[in-house]
Image 1 (cartoon, rainbow, N blue to C red):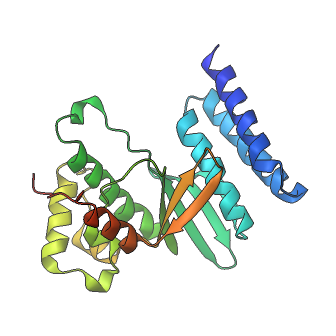
Image 2 (cartoon, rainbow, N blue to C red):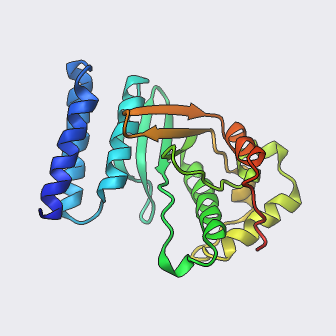
Length: 220
């Protein structure tokens, strides 16, 4: 089966599960987002694993009263996965699947932590609220410093995050001011199997990871 045909089949199957118990307004909004993803897939912009998580998260946000757009450009170089508006406020959500490219196979946790840090720092500057969406079967190494409110960060922690990001992201590099002001407000655990989303406080998520003994040193 061609990849485009499989993409369409999988999205249609997911849409059936997402809309089976929803009203017509929610169904219409989700169908518009599905059609947009189909267009982007034809342009080879999106992949199925990412797209299904976006749709499940989009339904959650629509039911929360948000108007949702997918793959929304924030500026000339940055596109977010979900851009949502409710009233006068906006919410930006970035989906993280935990993918590690082959050239980072020897330091996967360090690379992934840097990528998460960079996302929080860069995307939250465009958002009244910023959230990371992730599958429940991954434990992602979110830097503890960025899970805390900005007022709780020390100069040493900011320097550590700066050094971590600079290992992988220098065009352009993140600034100390951006690190100081970055804010992760929410984590969404996106369960595609059950088409459910669980909201978790970032500090609680990171503390849970630490309690399981899965924290690590950025300075590897």
